Length: 255
Image 1 (tube, rainbow, N blue to C red):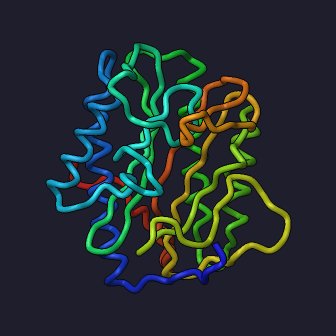
Image 2: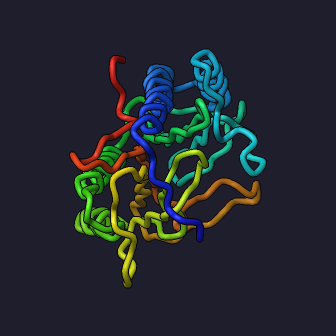
């Protein structure tokens, strides 16, 4: 990610908001279908059909060879889980769903972790902490702040609750490319990080583990899991930096 950070015009931000609203509506629709007995392949098919009906293209399908429209990551899986008719949701699971679209030349991207049926207190708390860490990160999206302010907010909150943040995978800028500069770590890196400017759009995505931060990639070449097999959760929003504060483009409206 050595390219310059691309600032979006107001008209481009409008398109990006439309793209992200399709993502938000898709995730809301999927929420109604996440239940014991459902396969992740079924969810994938629903997401692709829904987005194409709204004239958007699933962004992940075919990206660097990824086979699905959704990334569906179950329990100890962190990100990039592959949809499959062999993966059947069970009561007590937690399922992270990451979804993106391309619409009128721009990308939208968001993720949520959902409980399947009745989940443990531990799992429920993990979801609350991860969701709250994203909220605290978004509070730092102010002109003049730095990327490190976002990173620090996530890390400090998560670690204060006894969990860890994944270091191997980070958030990113987004626009006409799915992944643009800058990188947005969920932990503080020493040294000067980019200053936030009006017109940036950032995909902020805390990945939080109950255990330690170490992860590994399975033999399928995609699925990232915790090394200690502890639960992991993932929330993401695409957020525009403006002179009037952050605008969460992927927060659902009119659903």
